[in-house]
Amino acid sequence: MNPLVAGRLPDGRLGQVLALLLLGLVLVAAWAAVAAPLLAWHAEQADRIERRTTLARRMAQIAADLPRLEQQAAATAQAAPSKIVLLDGASDAVAGAALQQRLQDIAARTGASLSSMEALPPQPIGGYRQVGVRVTVNAGWAALIALIEAVGAGPPQMLVDDLQVHGQGGLIRDADVPLLASMTVTGFRTGAAGP
Image 1 (cartoon, one colour):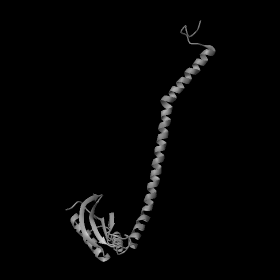
Image 2: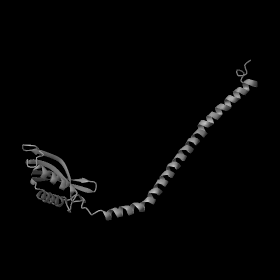
Image 3: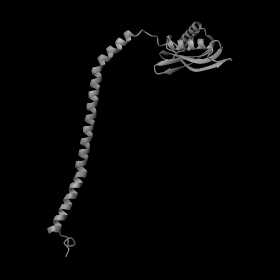
């Protein structure tokens, strides 16, 4: 009679094999339930410590470089001539008027004629206000190029955008051919929105 059918545990060679199989199942279950999660947690903690150590090392390196960078910035600021970057004005209207006056001065100096100027709505950009003017210019090629170069050179820092040039006969690059050009000139001022 088969010992498994009678309800008794097998003995002998079959009993030893079954006991080893049961022991193996218990060990696999213990591994899956306890050891594997503990090893995964340990690896995760080791990775976390490594990342924090790397971050701490990097932050210490940056902190050590800070005095040198501050000295370098101070030396650069002293060596470079002060350059006016922003438009003057406590409001957008005042800054726009200053921008228009600056454009008229540049046009007079370069020999270009400003036929119209239209103030554009100011735009907030970060902590600054972008103030712009749409300009129409009558000039020859050389005067137009001189105007654009002078606007880009500042001060204050100004940007030329949306440039459109139309010739009135002849080659556009001829110095004496009259040109009609339109462009947007923008500058920036600090502060909150103002009238």
